Length: 123
Figure 1 (tube, rainbow, N blue to C red):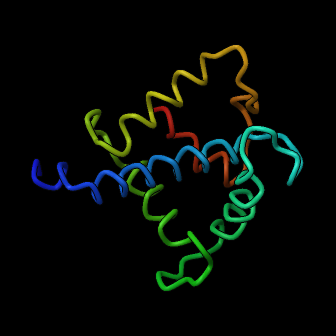
Figure 2: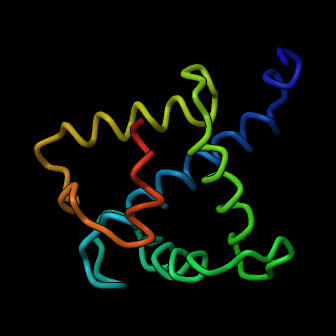
């Protein structure tokens, strides 16, 4: 609603969701060894989170960021609304980075649970 969009806390929550999606996207594709990524200091943590989330179905999981990351990824995969305040800007950013000559990503034919989860990121 318009009222919630004017709420500063709402904007912060949306920004956090966008940041989480982008960090998850980056870490799923980053080929740097854990702890060696020069793009973000959170890459190693996100890679560990991915490994955990691959098998986690616990809605009360106490692993940091597990449940919230699974929730936003689930929304992102299903979301078809180009004006979604969380997903729309992320899809645009992913699309632009995919077309960037400096993007260091895995080949499109990469497989595995992380890559399968991320395939929908720019769709």
